[in-house]
Length: 320
Length: 285
Image (cartoon, rainbow over all chains, first blue to last red):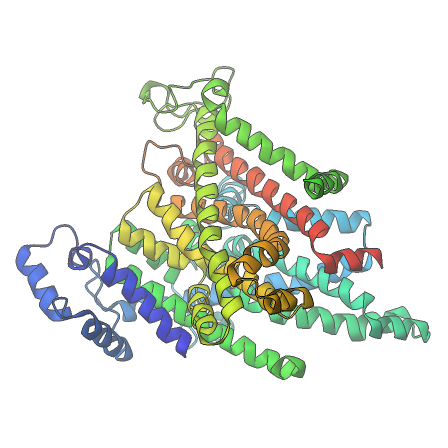
């Protein structure tokens, strides 16, 4: 909670105190003097700073993130409408990172310094060095343009299935529409791989390090000396160690994914909040960009809180 | 001095870290000697629409871009921009973050708390989100990108230094210095700082990699260098509309980014393996 309040204050400083004329930023380049005066009165820019800050908090508590210069709709509404698309992509990428990353990390640690280990480490180090938007473009070029295996952009072919969640793949499955499900998955493929790759690399590294550490820990050495077969040790203790270390890093992973979503959604024309931010930047839609900053910030803080809770449940040592 | 040479010797034994160092040195050479190494030093900035979008050949090693400029030369000049952005941004983050961490760790209690809370706020959002907000407010330019990156990376140094400083404060040799009446600033500069140097160095190398990627992303989004400045992220953005034909236009700056970030990451990993005492112990087991 205090972090959110602090974030709001920070965004306030950035948007209200830093610019020479914040009204000009909000109103846009082509605004008339009357328009600017109206905005000045509406948002109270002529009032003292602490009053402005207070008003800002009140405004945000109402859920009002200002109006978009481009769509003339409330920013909060636009963002909310686009959130499911980003969630679907982020979840898919997270699943990929965890489901592929953990096994590879564990195997890599167990076969330390083997050819397999070196190959995995090479790929994971590379994964953290590639610009994700560039990777997306190259994958697009190869798979969509040259080979024609995957669609180029967008979320689905034809009309989206009716649904509650807004996650097109889930909705299609729930509605029993296999064609739509397939289409949704195909459209998800490239963006998910692109977005998930750096997260995958991170998971592999942390899992590998975690397993190595567990293997050398006193508990495991004791077990080995007691004659407990290695396979039992691996599955019971090392896996748990690997999972715990991943849960700890999920906050970090989510940060990578959310940050990456901005450019990835742009490359694949994926209609989520990242794409919204990109268009807002292009159009100098100031309210929209600031609204996005706050929105993304609050979502990120929320996810981290959730992860902390889960972590406290899984590992009581941390809670103390 | 001896410690430094010792470090270099240990580094030389780690092949991947050595590779990283070689790549970074190559980057520095490319950046400094760009006008000499470039095949078309003027064409990098000129507009030559007659030659636009040519495939790589003997004259244009990596082809030409939409303005007819030589991609190879532009990538070389882009190395300068990348290096400048990375060094200044990470350097500034260091200069802001380390003192704050030292002060917060040393004085503790409520000043320390306030400072750490503040840094937590900056860490509460992914770096690029906050950087976008700052860059959008100030207007798109390289200077503002550097500013935005510095203002969002400093907390990483602060946290590191804060934790180490607090731990060190309980060490006997520090306690005895305090008891002897040595002024705090002397203790901090002469005793605490050298002991936190190792994690700072590792974090700096890794930070260079992250900063370059974030700067490229900001350039891609249009918030960084403006045309015709040859910034790698921006070049990739410009090349988008010419896929799938002009593949060299997209490939070249991307590979450049990859190699450079790889170099810093490998070096950072190597440094961490050498400097982090926990890992040293683990390796010897």
